[in-house]
Image 1 (cartoon, protein in one colour):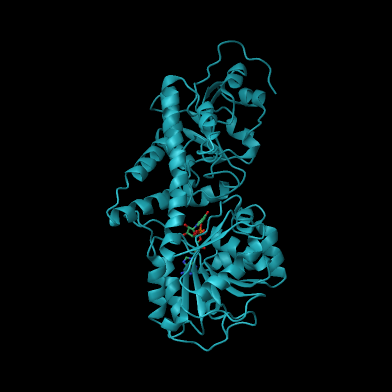
Image 2 (cartoon, rainbow, N blue to C red; image 1 turned 90 degrees about the vertical axis):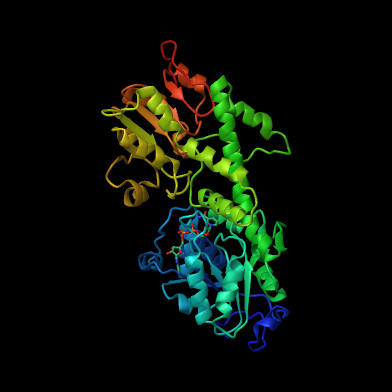
Length: 476
Ligand SMILES: NC(=O)c1ccc[n+]([C@@H]2O[C@H](COP(=O)([O-])OP(=O)(O)OC[C@H]3O[C@@H](n4cnc5c(N)ncnc54)[C@H](O)[C@@H]3O)[C@@H](O)[C@H]2O)c1
């Protein structure tokens, strides 16, 4: 027996073969949950599960991260997460530790939420997931449910199960429960999911997870139980579909730019078709982040492994790689290949608003390209500057605390992330600060004709460039 909370089956440990057919005898009440890996996913999952009354131990091998969390400091920017973590820490439902083995021993349900970065060949690198599986196997002290929440290729749950079972006689129920939260809205997404997908192969695990998720689906959103392989594929299919919509619209945007059409009008024209729907149809400077790029690559790899043509997804990637360079292309078309002596101001670094995540951010491609051509770059982001400085750009750019500061004497403003604070700026102030009133907008924040009337040379994605033809009119 591990903790004081609910145990799903009172019987003593059985052999693996028997485990699949057993049913929980006693459900309801607080559960003992271990979450291994305390990054964007693990921290949100741990805090939300603690908030519904479970006893949660979050374990991570990153000592600095755990020390900060134990002081109530949140190492990432995620709206709503800090009060949730603090409250559950204070009320002792949530603990943080570097002792993964202890977290395993004390938990009945163990969620694996470690990173699965791309390997050299694009496949998901499973070394962290399998390392955790070994630690679980070595520390099994009773029947446990192991849930893969990390995004892992089809067949991984089987490998996790085999790894654990090779090290223990205690029964283990391995499930696949992919996480669909969006950075920037992660707490809300976990608390009010569109659906919960769970791949299971035993009633014991099925009932325990139904119980665990019950507080989050009270409004009637479904828990979709399925076989494990289907659950594993569902996560990749979801991300690949979303990335496909983005690249599709970016391809259409390229055509709009060529013929002088407006991709925003096309977006509305198709998004109102109920078969298509309005989400994920915005053209822009390309997708980034820790999920779409790596998950598209990993799915291509899996498709190749099984001899299935991955042509659609290869095109999705190619379009996106090109799209991340679009603002750089516009800059070099406007100012020439040699940007020595030019100065650019950049608004937005994170791969999307409401996060400090810089992984695969399109801003990095543009900034590196500008620097490589001899330009100087001043940047602003409300949350991501520290991460950018520490892990990506170092002291090669100037970081400005205030967004208008980046504009001083700059040849152009480049907008890379659609943070709310950039949506209604003081246009007269921008015009006064810039060396020349040129804006390259990678997120289509403004109306081109309004920008032209305000005296700007304005370039955006999939829309006609706006060039002032007369004296600027007063705006703002
Ligand atoms: N970030 C997202 O929006 C998101 C959404 C859905 C799914 N996912 C998936 O969830 C997984 C985690 O993503 P993330 O963004 O939270 O990653 P992350 O890099 O932010 O966090 C991973 C954490 O795991 C820890 N870790 C690594 N090896 C460990 C080990 N052996 N034992 C304990 N801790 C270990 C790391 O120190 C790190 O803190 C990935 O598979 C990702 O694809 C991410």
